Length: 179
Image 1 (cartoon, rainbow, N blue to C red):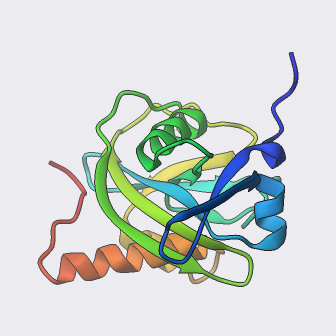
Image 2 (cartoon, rainbow, N blue to C red):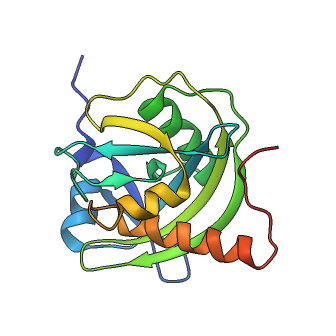
């Protein structure tokens, strides 16, 4: 059996309006900094705490950073929803939970250009962490995460989506902590 090579995964490339334009291997997407799609899943426990992961040093972007979401690149021929379910199962061993759509967002920095679809779910564990991608993880309050982000690197696209969630909550919108 041939070993899986993430660098060769076929990735759907999109334009600034999130319309598909081509399919390229993941390493080309990163090398050329092409706009792609990704799913983000915020995993809350019933107490409203967020599961925060520490990314491994082998990740192709933001290695060693804290990450507020499970998730990853949407592959060619895959929907955001299918990618979210796949990534949640691969990274955390979580299957069969209801994924709740929150919003879409565009994020861009020097290394990354991505259209993300953000979901949330409620799951208190246990988790089976994917050793190639997730070094460790724990639940924490959003306030504690904000404090920690002042001294530890957190994925910038993740911080952007938390800012958007906080703005949504302060304007009276629903915040997906618990039911």
